[in-house]
Length: 253
Image (cartoon, rainbow, N blue to C red; front, side):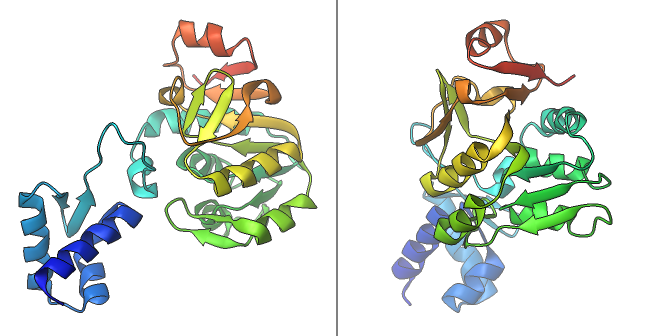
């Protein structure tokens, strides 16, 4: 494979995953460690990617909506997400059957739930792995087509499995909340969250305050269909007044 073809392939890999490691390049392109690093350095000099330790990260156009990778999301608003998760945990009663969707805020919720006596249904592999060794959780993972960027199972198989299930509470997250709309990047992932909310007695959205007054590709639910939004205490009074007209907003301390 000539250098130009390698560079195009590297950029294609970054478009899909957002990040790439030297080890992945060696395996995928069948090249040496030195060649991989030279290619990344050359592309970085052209401004086509950002070098990281052991690999590279895609450069995003700030004007172009894109889906952050799980790794990118995991380091954002971690304190706020933990407080939101703690507040959500306080609303759950032992013996309940709940649904937890994909998302880093919901992974924090899973951590809080490890010792609870409840049943958890999820289509999130990270949530499943957090709870898998709990001695008290009755855990069910919804299978289907695996979406690596968020660690979620989606598609017709996941939909078919969810259709027959009912929950006392469903906890989901989103990339954006604007006007009366709740949005995410992926329509197929949004459809699973929509179904889970429809099948729950109480429908609860967990989002940090940076998600308000933002837009994304697929609107999968409306605020007035929710029972509550749990967010952090950085939400503005103006946002509380605006979005509080459609649903109950609970602030985590």
